[in-house]
Every structure is written in structure tokens, then in C-alpha cells.
Amino acid sequence: MRHRVRKHPDDRFQCTRCRAAFVTEARALKSTFKCPEEPLAHGHPYEREHVLYPFSYDRGDGYGPDRLCDVIDCPLCVGHACDCDVCTEQLEAPSLKVLIDSHEHGNRKRSPNWEEEEEMEDLKDMLAKVQPGDWVTAFGKDTRGHEVTRTGTLLADPKEMKATHNGVKVKAVRVCVGEKGTDPATRQTWTTLIPDHGYIRKTEPPKAGEWMHGEIRNIPAVRSARLDVNARLLFGGKGGKRSTEPTHDGTLAEITYAGAGRYEVTAVESGEVVFTGSLQSQVWWAYAPEDDQDQEQDQDQEREAPEEPDNALFVLEQDERQDQGDDERQKVPETDYGKPVHHVVTGELVGYWTLKKFTPIEEIQR
Image (cartoon, rainbow, N blue to C red; front, side):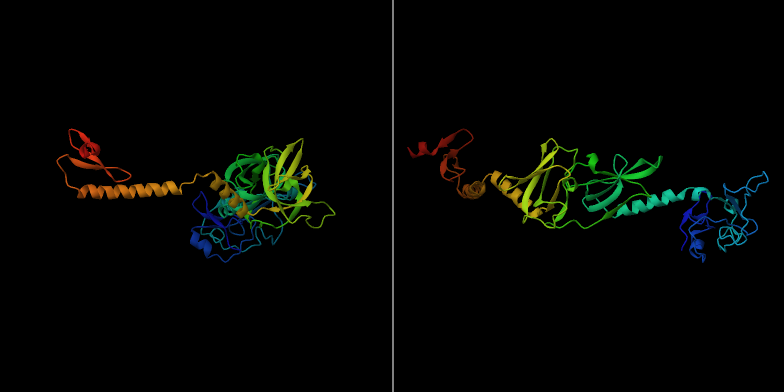
């Protein structure tokens, strides 16, 4: 495996896994030594120190355990053939010649702790593949610290934060996943992704009419903490352990909270309540086609919108007449009574105008 190299504060390029160090990044790419993905002691084989702490071991002479590795071909110290610049003595790095290795409780930590940073980068790579509006599946922790898997629309941009994991504050990312149109401030959509204990992936959205069976609580937009639930779906009937298929063809319905922990499923067309249950009640349901919802919204807008075709036509005719009237006024020469004035709408002559007065057409005809 290739080395994962980063620039060290001491101006060297060092692998974040095996600690192999190079003068330049180009030399690291030419290395033929495969990274074992665990820390190694580097330098001349005679100068490498593998400090081992088997705390459960005691020599019995009162001096405690032997602090150095005594394995002749240990793959972590004298047994490897690394070709980095430290092992070939082209780069001096005394700190890499010593490997602090603790086997207590199976723990083998690296210092500096690059593992957390690498896992955070991997998480950021996942987040870079999704954007608000995508249908995603996220696994992490909710606001109570319980593991949760949410599937739905990514409602907002991810936000970096600090979270408590195994009693320790660690870097984390919060994402909001829920029903489309839900306010991202709703805590029931929050999912905290821990770098080594969470993921987010872009998935295919469910198809309209694809039947699903489960509790009402698992239907998107239905949350026990929300009293304003109004989820539209296709209702297929009551479910349960003995139910193998929907009992209805698919009734377009809405779920509303009725109070006292009860939820009502109401048919959209008839307004009849077809089912009443709690969050634990099992039902058959499917996503409602978006075209039907858009069509109903368009029809509602058409009913509310005023009829303007005749008015628009009238204005157009009025503008045309006004243009024609302008042309006619340009063609009509000025008389002794002044300039002719035409009606704005009909175009008829209504009088003559001068700088001193306006003379109606009736006076002239008299």
C-alpha cells in the first residue's frame, strides 16, 4: 500500500500511518516499501528503539518489565526494510527512531494523533458528494445520544461542531435529514455524524406507489414531538404480523394529529376518516405521486386567479387605438381653432387645443 504523506512541521514529508519520512514528496512516490499501515521505528537498524509496555508482565526481580522489544525479527523495529530517507540515513529525525508501543487493552496509539484527522477527512469526502435537496441516508446519533438512521431529504448544509463520544469531546458534523420542506431547526431531523461512527450516502428516492409496511412513527413527516403533522400519502390499509399485502388499492390520504396520542388518516377526496391509531400502529402506505399534488395546487391557483384575458385584450386594443390616434394626430394639420384632440379610447375628434384654451367640438359645430 502507498504511503499517505503529509508535510510535517519539521519540513519533512511523513507518512501518517507508518511514519516513514522523506525529504521531498517526489521521493515518497518513488518508495518501493509497502506501508504496513501501523507505526514503525525508523533509522539505522542498530539505532531503532522499540519501547514496549506489556504492563501485565513482570520479570520478578523488582525492576519491572523490560522496556525494549526483544524479538529478533520484530516487523515494527529491526525486522522491516523500509527505504525512507531516515532509514537510509539521508534525513535526520531522532524522534522517529523511537517507537512507543503500548499493548495494554490492545491499545496502540499514534502520536501525533492523525487518525482522527484522517477519519474527519473521509467524512468530509462523503459530505462533498451530497448537497441540500438530495435524497440521502445518514447514520449517526440523535440529540439524546442514541444511534439513529434517517432517510430523507438533506435539508441544509452540514455544520461542523463538537460532540461527546465515549465520554470524550470530538469533532463531528451535524446534518439535517427529513421530509422535504421541513424546517432544519427541527431537532427531530438532526443527525450527528462522528468521524469513526457515522456516514452519509446519496441514495435513490422511493418511487411513488411502492408499498411499504411499518409503524406510523416511521412515516416521513410524522414525529411524536410534532402536533402539526400533516403528511400526504397513499394509504393501503391496516397492517400487522398477519398482513401480507395492502387491503386497499391506494387511497390518497393525509395523516393528522387528533390529540391524546392518536393520529387520523383522512381520505382527501371524501374527507372520511379511514383509519385511527397511535404511533405504534402498523399500516400499509406509499409515497403520493407529486404530479397529483402539483396538479391540485395548479387547479387551486387557477380558481383563485382572476380572469384577465378580456381585460388584457381590451388594454391591447386600447394601446393600438392610441397608437393609431397618434398617427392620425400627426397627419391632421393644425387649423384656426388649434391642434385637434382625439378621444383616447375611441379615437373620435373631441375638440381643438391652443395654448390659451380648449374648444370642444360641440361649440364649433354650433
